[in-house]
Image (cartoon, rainbow, N blue to C red; front, side, top):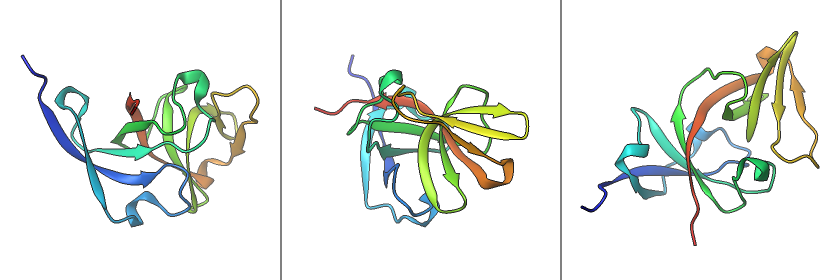
Length: 128
């Protein structure tokens, strides 16, 4: 039996400088229905900051829109209301650490008020 597919918005690139909410939906992507939660969208990954989580440059991530995340989850986060990034989230005393899953890259330390969680990564799609 064929797996059922659904269309979700592909909102752009995760490293874009604009807030995701400000990006007009230009295209959609078909994903297996079991990857889709209530408020789901997709982003194309640019860069290698998450390669140790097997998220590579050019992959598409499926993101469940929510404003909180558990320690260690891969999140799409907005920094200082400007830059959108994909990192692992760690809540620490006095703030937040956004940790790349790439040992050659440094973590980003922020005050709680300087970071906004936009969603958590629920799936990764590798496109040929």
